Length: 463
Ligand code: EPZ
Image (cartoon, rainbow, N blue to C red; front, side):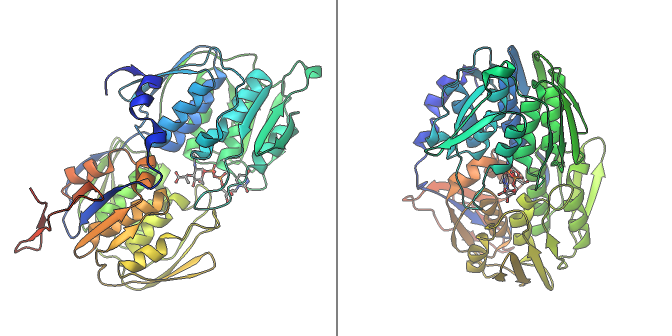
């Protein structure tokens, strides 16, 4: 990707131009075997938090291994509105947050990218004021921000919510600085933990966050802040202690590999009964996912220094219950359901993190799966094989699940709602094609030549 200021690039990839109803369709021809190696991109959820964290720094920051995704473009656009200069150079972002202003982040952008709410912590601790629209709910749940707000209030912020905008400010008496506090999170919220870590880096005194989220992306943000000179201990445990410092300095920082993209490709290997390798990866970021893949009969081999190899065998049913890290990640629930839909036997997937994250069940059932939803449980009866069908993606990870199901199904699957996919997976189609998958994205009105059935049931794309 050529060097250009992000603002200019946005005019080329203006996220507002993404049609509300994305008109493209992804056709997937199933039953193709995969082979080879796939490169894992930088972690979306780490990059988004760290981009917000760059607001803390009055000097240039260089972020490396930043994936090219719709969500990253949207976060860049929001930071630009806040006076931040961003320049993309290939996989790197140069961020100049010397003069952030206290503009209000625009609702139409915040409502499309929940992670943009994370700017509230850095803005408040750096400027003493922040005005950020409530992100609102999304397909998977109400997504409140009460834990973020209550934590900031504990640190001395005055917070009012007026016409859907969170107005936070630090009253002049304390020199407009947040104060260190002891904060207990009712739930180990990733976003709230990240907001409060960032707010505490420049606060006066020490902040303790109890029942903190332990996700690798939280640790990556903490490591980024420490590289800028922040004093943070305990990231990755349920108790994080931050001692405020007067200011931070520039940093050159590389984002960790995306563990959810890694898990998605491991499932792609398992669901197509294909042996593939993936790197770079951090194996211990996927302990729960690897354990479950082994439980169903798949070999997952760690090859030094940072590579995984998957060697499928049986597909035995096994129960899954999502929970905060180090538990089974909620973001892998939908991709794993596509796999278990074809397993030998019955199993239950329980979603405990989000209240409405089973909407992909109906679409998988259109493909011949036998899944019943009972509350936050999906009761799965494994079927021998799924069948291709037209389906609609309802959220980011559901769209990945439908692609995976399409790779395994008999016949062709046509997936709509691809703007969800483009938010979180960098070059997913190209990476799958390079492994031998048969898929093609076309505009809705375009005709797609039917594939030619050949002897070995392999199917070839139209020329
Ligand atoms: C982050 O969302 C991720 N997004 C999500 O990934 C991920 O699924 C989630 O963490 C859980 O791991 C980013 O990092 C950008 P939470 P976040 O706060 O921070 C409730 C993906 O597909 N809650 O840990 O919003 C909340 O409603 C996305 O890449 C409150 O009640 O997740 C939810 O039920 C999807 N009050 C639960 O906690 C709050 O103030 C977990 O939310 C905050 C959260």
